[in-house]
Length: 288
Image (tube, rainbow, N blue to C red; front, side):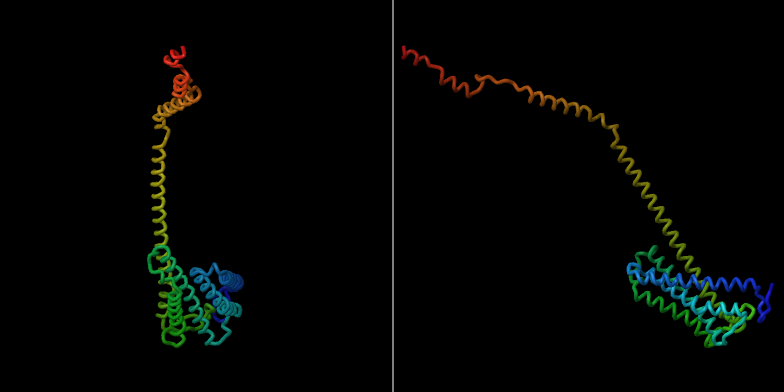
């Protein structure tokens, strides 16, 4: 079943589904991003560079859900554009602007992860606050110039309302090359760059894992060979030495337990005493 209101040919089922979908995204998106921002900002141990990128991405999505999605819901609900032409241009321009900020934030996240995993030897100043601020300034400036300045000032591109799709977007008749510009710098190049970054990260991690496994196998081989050299196969060589040591210990114990008796005559002390006590022959003759 189709509805021909305002010249669109969108099914009524699609319009109902789009409205419910937008409401769900608004409710869960706003609450989820708000909780993420609060948790990271309130905990000091989570104030890292990676979490900074996540907070920035959440803030961008939050603005998109607050300012863009309600206008899109109203368009599907009333099945027409209920605001002015200037609002139509602003809606289309900021839709592309928030989308560009989000996609290039993902580009920066992939770039910093590539640097942290694969190119760790690069200058640590790459992650400094100054350089990150410069990177975000470049992203904001380029996205703002392409999505807002060029079409709004009619330098290149134009936004208008299309009743057939119930949306304000870039014109396909005025400066059609602007569409190619948006898709080139807003879809193709960012996604190709992100894919290349994560493919390089995957290959680097896989090669590192293989090196670690090879090193572990080599270490286990060395450890097993060392243990084999210390097995009881060589222990019989020590038995004679153990027997000799046991014999010597038993002999020493027998010597301690059974000492040889010593006679008084064999002692020098007793010999000296006998010499003094034994009368001499001259003394005996004198007495007689």
